[in-house]
Length: 521
Image (cartoon, rainbow, N blue to C red; front, side, top):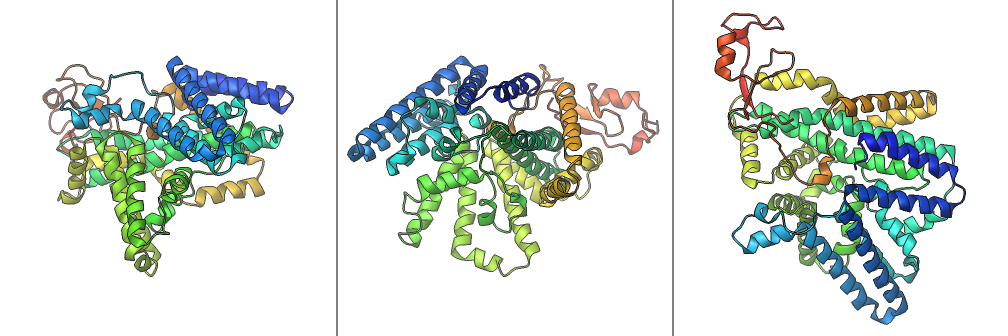
């Protein structure tokens, strides 16, 4: 079950909120939240629920042992972290590791074992942070399995974060109040994230998905448009999910740390990663970079630590070489900025700083999007090597998605937050109306459109072709039609429409652009 699914929006969430506000006392509310979180996990699969319970129990036992035997705490914590990483590796990286030592490709090993539990990358990091924090400060631990299990399985944060720390979460378990303000602010933030996910991200995907699926005919304008659309898609998809998780937490009285702070307004890669997926950056800083020595052991050791952190960051995002390349690309840029580039950037005009940052981020997202590194490199070559400056198909995509793209560009800046603050301060009555309208629009999108799964949670770009036969797998794109897609072959189209004949939209057929396009339903 996803936070943007029809069942969650129309059944699970209303029922959960009603029951939570009808109950009295924090203990009864916490019990309800634990039940709801376990049910949410069980909707994915019962095996996911069993594995999550097992992970929580193992870390609870090790936490008790660390509290009971503090002198052996370091060894116990190290063993617990190794077990957590082995658990993550067995379900997420086993096929990738086997493909490195055996000739069969990774896809051939993908059917091994049980499917990975829901949100394994995120709740494993929660488990590790709990163990390490307990080792550092016994006050951060707990003797209550109930509290630890609720922290690990809390359903708003289960599938894609934000990655919270147990001391912050535990402090709120007994100090929350049921207030109308929390409910209203939580619903507002949730609807805002839902709109980002279903309207802006899905709108950008209508460009990025078919362009990325296109082969040799790709030319530079279309390649750049597809990359920029993907840049917007992944931001609104992930930041939208984070907004939904923060809003859900607020509905139930929890304050969740922010995960994004206008990353596309950054003026350097260093600044970008202080704004993008902040809870993940803080996690790697506190549990990997600083324990390795950080910047305390000389410049060379600091650069090595940066490389290690970004190798692990890329690997955490997915078990494929393109994610490692993506992470190492950022690590290389951060090292350059650390050595000399950042001081020159700070002297340059703001426009140049921002242009450099967005160009680097755009290239990085191309690496991220293509699991096959060869395809990613080919796409980049089409962006920079294609001599064509005009594309009818590019104009078609711009024309049909111009409104969504313009709104997305504005929403990527600080204007959205400023407009939101202005409405809350000057026109507070408009906020409920706008939220209701956005919710109705999102509901219409869910009912009308096919399900659009959370992009960042998949950690890879998947293309599914609906046609079963090879001859029907390729569709032909005709910009003059209302729908834009024909099931007929190109010769059939040309026979049906003679040169000079008028299309349904009134354009002369001889002036139309007919291009082949692989279209993903």
